Each structure stands twice: as structure tokens, then as C-alpha cells.
Length: 47
Image 1 (cartoon, rainbow, N blue to C red):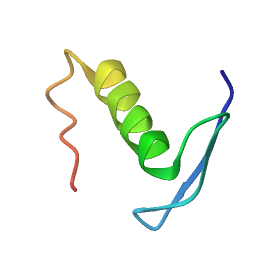
Image 2 (image 1 turned 60 degrees about the horizontal axis):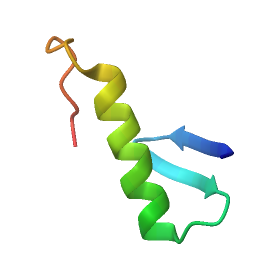
Image 3 (image 1 turned 180 degrees about the vertical axis):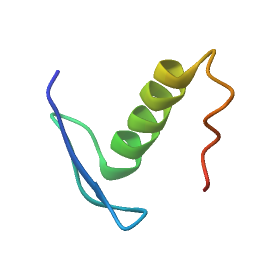
Image 4 (image 1 turned 90 degrees about the horizontal axis):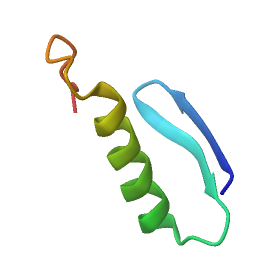
């Protein structure tokens, strides 16, 4: 699966994930982000 996203000014300007709806794209990205940040509690999301 292909991911393409742009994060700037605390907002997502472009989120593209082949074959997925906008909400699903965002949810998937958030899940991936949480998995990548797992175990590093020193970096809490400011959102």
C-alpha cells in the first residue's frame, strides 16, 4: 500500500492512501503513528 502525506502547521495538508476513504486514511495514519511512537512516552501528541 502507498502512503503520501504532508504535515505542516499542526494540520494535514495532504493525506493519500491508495484505495481508502479520507476518514480511513486519517485513522490508518494515526494508528501507524501511535505504533511507531509506542514505548516512547516522552513524546506525547499535542493534539
